[in-house]
Image (cartoon, rainbow, N blue to C red):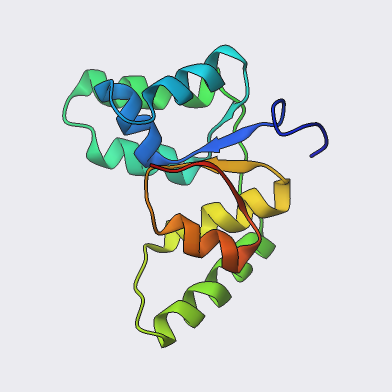
Length: 136
């Protein structure tokens, strides 16, 4: 994607949406991305949010993300890149959720950055070529 770092879309990770819902951590940055219409969602993040939702209302709110924000979907090439990088990490004894590798591969392909509060994304980003918008 083209444009400056201040106008490019940002893939919002599950941890950032949770911070937003609880009014903590990255909540102000998520609000900034929502207001500027730069927040991106992807189905794997929505699935994680739905899995963790404690109420019917919470699930409905998370389902609504796909109607409000642009949805970007991983391609086969993103899955392959994610699997290769994850295998390298596994061989070194570092276990990280597969979805996080997928998000990093997707963001790298799109030229967008990732907003997350998960510190392991710093290591993943370096291995995939993804950039971080911000981590806590």
